[in-house]
Image 1 (tube, rainbow, N blue to C red):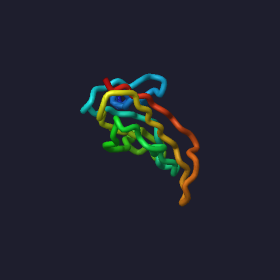
Image 2: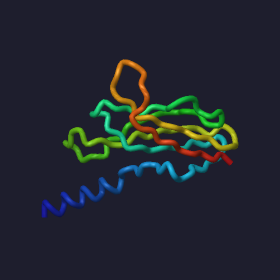
Image 3: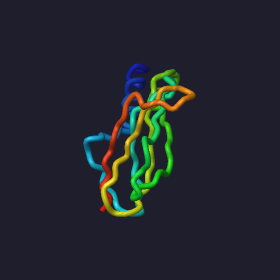
Image 4: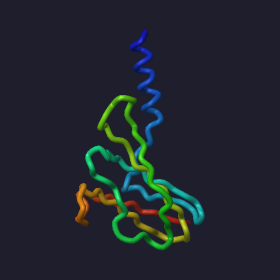
Length: 120
């Protein structure tokens, strides 16, 4: 019985895990609305996602939050960063996030992901 409860608990936790945003799909929104980009992240590695370059004028950064997606007690398992932006004006925008190594100096990101936003 206790194994059954364990697997049911894992299933319920898995159902609550945010799904990462796919860079190959356009995010559609309207002016004045907020939207989110969710990307896999593991801050225990020291790597951190940051915005690369300047944002287009029709979108605005609002917040960045980390959510652990592992069961309690799992150390170093990672999670997701949830980036929230606000659509300001109609048009197309791109948002590029870069995964930066831990460092005291500015370097090129180890990896980038670019997302397309259509504000209608």
